[in-house]
Amino acid sequence: MSNTDNVLSALEAMLFAAGDPVESSKLAEVLEIDIETVTKMLGHLSAMYDERESGLMLIKVDNKYQLCTREEHSESVRKLLEIKKNTPLSNAAFEVLAIVAYNKTVTRSFIEQVRGVDCSGPISSLVQKGLIEEKGRLDLPGRPLIYGTTDRFLRCFSLNSLEDLPDLPKTEEIENLGNEGQTSLFDDEKEATLLNTEVLEGEGDDEYMKVFLIVLAVIVLITALILAISAEFTIIFDNGWSTKIRVLFIEKDIQLSKLLSFIIAPDKAGKEAAEKSKKKKKDKEASPVEEAEQPADEQPVIEETVEETSEETVTKELPVPKEAKKEKPAKPNPIQKILNEDGVVGILLLVSNLIQTANSAITTLIKGLHIYSLYVKMIIGGGDAASIGDKYGSICSWYFPLKGLIMNQMKVDNYDDLIIPDFIAPRSEYEFQFIGSISVGLLVKVGLKAGKVFLVNFIKNR
Image 1 (cartoon, rainbow, N blue to C red):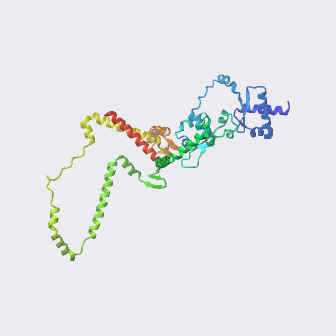
Image 2: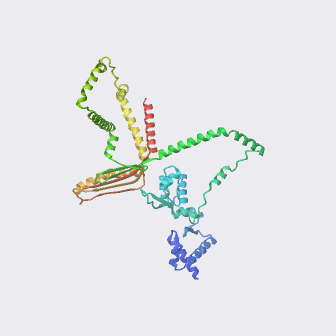
Image 3: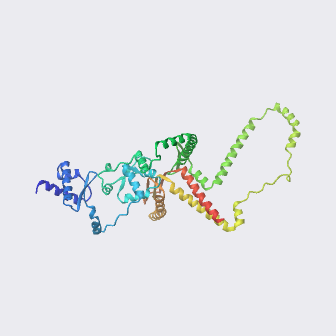
């Protein structure tokens, strides 16, 4: 057996045993020959399989080589190994795969920006099928994941590398494709000239239309910019609450307790704010009176003036009889009105409507809330083993279901947690960090959704 036959046999044995694609440099290193010789021998091996119409074939995937069965024998292999057919990719998965392949590495937010819809489902499906994989994280707030294609993608689409992807059509080619099959609008040059003359005569009307379209485009653009404005919240608990809110380039620290009290009890918070403003007004009114006090030698002049105008003052300050005063009608209580008209059933229907409205608003808010980073740390200690175990079990019973709800229902870029019992720690430690954003568009969507639910239920109940 010649040296060439030995190399071919060794290459065939190594590729068969490896199963997965192997780099040519690795094969050359094992055989202790140069890469050019290995590449040449692999070409001979591939030609030999093709010449004798073998059931095996040699493929090249991104400068890696792999032995695999031919496509015409796939049904026999599948029956032998009882391999189920993979479910075909959906149109959404194909679109996501194309975006990843043509952009090499992308984040989930970039894919969703291109498609305009949530892409967590197609991305998860492609990762499970091994067509795309995580390539790392971007060095940005939230550390978003980067996705790229795999060797399996290249094998499935018979590509040596991503450079072999077909070129994307240019704008001119797309327009030409749209114009294919269209017949000429004119039978001769004379008809074209007449039509051009009519168009020129109607240019005055078109100017108004252009102005209208420009104004409309500006309004749409301004509306889109306003809806895109988002507020970024940073909430940290580490032996005390620290809360920051940033809108565009404005950043401000806020007291979370005051914000929660305003949300939970807006009437009480409003009354407290009104009392504070009244107190400030009284203090301002009291200070000018003290400054306006006159010296004693000018008092007689003031008394004379008062005597001259006393009759007019008395006339103005005469008390109005009680009979002449019109009693203001008491403001109707809406709940009392419903109770009088519909009874307890009406109150129950109102409460049910409010609960459904609140549920719709909260669900929409949760699904649209974008969490850049979420970190939870709970080290349970400060007691005997039994009490620490009970406390740890109680915390896990509600924490992990809540974590599953957050991961499945919200957009979370980065989530880390540390929940452990510490039987020697003198006390429990808690730490929490939340960084997320709410856009104006989301708030408008929440209001419209809640308003729609409330109005539909109100009409049904009536």
